[in-house]
Image (cartoon, rainbow, N blue to C red; front, top):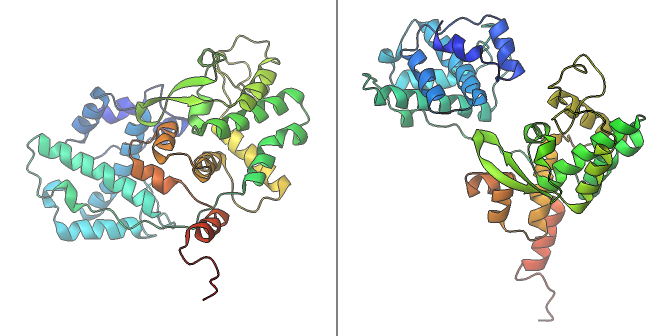
Length: 343
């Protein structure tokens, strides 16, 4: 069994990764030392999710190589340009099914793929492989700068409170309200929320979590979020370790059952539509809102960086989406010629 298949067989991988295995994706054939590269990632404590994403992104590179019957030793600057054009094209094959995609990759997805390739090229060089290109030649593409789409604070509050009125089952209502309250109170990612266990909650309002890239940090519940979490826990009569568990469905009998990300995202979408909030809003929007509204209240970007678990302050600065209302107020307050003069 190759390292790639070994990685895909790991129980800790995401459902998407396991589905990739079930679809029996072809092994790499044109990327030299690729098994060694994935062994390197595994033995250097990269998370299963990171390894899965590297594999999926490098499949684009391998598809490109196969289409031209080339290997790394054949690479040059011209082929790098052709590969980036291939990624941007709607004629690109999908990573897993090898069918024509018909959908253009976003700049963020392209850059993630290029980042994986740079890591792979760097590995080849470290292994003293005769590689004709260097990582820096795979330059990132310019990213789109969409207008910030963060719902107004009153709309986010309505969304957070909506399970109390839109859910008929009292336990589901209490559980979903607690999840949304915690997301907005802490700024944590949806995966971090749904991976919480009961033992992670000690009553102090401070939660120690392991986030993206296995980075560890503290997040903090507000008093309001603590109240709604306690209301939900009062319903619990089970001994399950997960903080949030489903009350029905095919996984109800499983001892390790948890709320799925798909369920929570679908519920948020339904609440938004019921409330007629016209700005697309997701669990990640609550994280954006957390950062944005803390910044509007004068919070230090460095403090927000720590709370969000970002390694770089530049990431946090890009992440904070100031609303038009805040931008207008800032202009009015700080512009040097904002006041009418009698002269």
